[in-house]
Length: 143
Image (cartoon, rainbow, N blue to C red; front, side, top):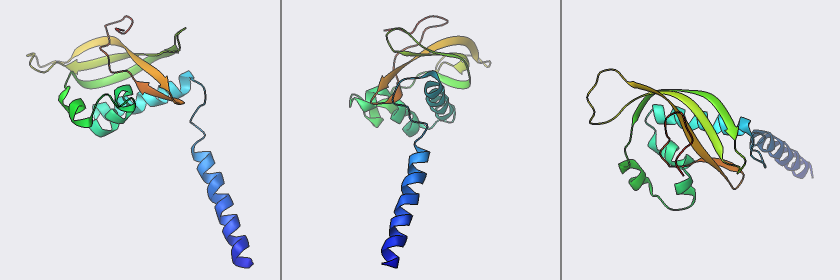
């Protein structure tokens, strides 16, 4: 009986701890959770962590892109990202505006290019996912 009560208390405490750890997951799209996800994505991108960034991609969630395909996609090499604005448009799409510094592979130059970009995100199954689309300078992301 004592063991049963102890196990019950242990499971109850474990449930409370796990529930508290999930508190940042939102059931509805909001800018705070979007900012957190975008910052985590770009931190991983800056450190070259392809597995982490792939797990943030909408195309992975929808089964449209394997990790091997994602690794081959290449693209700009970012050296600095500063998120300056986060919003949700009238269609529910997340828009992250950021000041960036990056190099384009194959383009000569010792100094990184600097540009303000908008980055699109989609709300899928109660979580924000990065939309693998080309952002355009200072404007809305390509559809």
